[in-house]
Image (cartoon, rainbow, N blue to C red; front, side):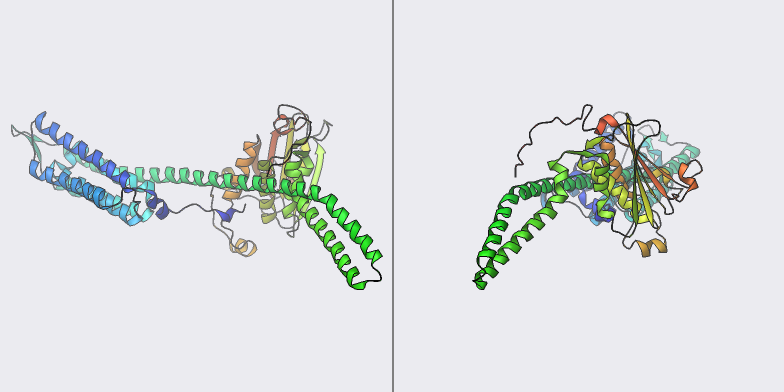
Amino acid sequence: MSETMISPLQGHLRGNWIRLRTLTALRWMAIVGQVAAITVAQRLYNLELELGLTYLVIGVSVVGNLVAMFVLPENKRLTERENLLTMMFDLIQLSFLLFLTGGLHNPFALLLLAPVTVASSILTLRSTLILGGTSIISATVLMNYHLVLKTNDGLVLMVPDVFLFGTWVAIGIGVIFISIYARRVTQEMNSMSEALQATQMALSREQQLTDLGGVVAAAAHELGTPLATIKLTSGELVEELEDRPDLQEDAQLIREQADRCRDILRSMGRAGKDDLHVRQAPLTSVVRDAAEPHLDRGVEVTFEEHPIEGENPRMPSILRRPEIVHGLRNLVQNAVDFANKRIWVEVSWSGDIINIRITDDGRGFPSDMIGRMGDPFMRRRTTQREKISRPGYEGMGLGLFIAKTLLERSGAELSFFNGRDEYSRESADERKGAIVNVVWKREDIDARNGPNAIQSGFNQPIEI
């Protein structure tokens, strides 16, 4: 699966995910909390409050919720603009309520962070900046203009100026820090979720192709005998109808079409018979099968096969799992895309491990990003040379992430480095490009020995 097939959703699309019902439920919770706080402040702490105005401000929220509940559909999903206006309404309502209850002297001024935090998680950067700026402006106004809090005895409740200024600074810093933090964490979670979904789609597609190939292989096998009979019979008819040219031509056509059907079934069966019909294959066969779609793309692909030095075990036969084939295919595709003229696929094994190393002669991984290889949707600036050589290419994140995820699911460990690095053994020859090293414990994918060995027996019929 190409990296460009699936791209991360933009913020304005995520904003359309939020239901009106969710925001109205949160607002009802805020309304209950505001009424409770005012009731406790008045009755328990004997504070003098402008009850008429405070309940009027709260009543505006109540009316807004009732209108939303009875006028709009319950399952309505708000657009980006509607979400922004809804949160702006909540922020302004809270600011008016704080104005009536002491401004920044009121400890509940911390709630000015709430709308900004929610917005940074679901809305675009522009909407988040608008709400964040409004929140900071509100805090600045409330620091200087508000109704003072005082008790029934006339005692004015105020914090020292230094603490008042500290509260304003804390709210400003909180708006900035929490917005950035929440936005980054949410983006990471969304990117990971979408990348995992893309990985699952890739694996599902590979499995479907594998299943289809098995069915085609079975069909080719079953149709082989009747096609051979048709060809034999039509050949005899061609010889017997030499005195009937019109009928001989028809018999010749039947023979040619039987040959054509045989060739079609043979080509279709070749792609799939080893994927499902034969559930295991020699290690090198699986690697070559994974690399096959990229062998004719103008880059020389060299395969090297040998046991690990000091040992001489027999080449293993491994499981033909779709995740292994697709993961290796993505790694070979990435190497071919960035190679100048040649890539090397080195296969080695021992009694304990199986190792596959893919190397190219390109420029290698960017040194500042090599530690992040395999992260989903990783991006970097594309040079003009890359735009010419790889039109439409937007990054190297999703393809490598899919490969890494699929191979790790099969038990592999992946490492990324460059052949030109000081400690790389390839640094002395032309293998100076990117290197991806894939290592399995042999027992994890060995199809003949160990816990995953395939038991011998009769082939089961393929169910269509």
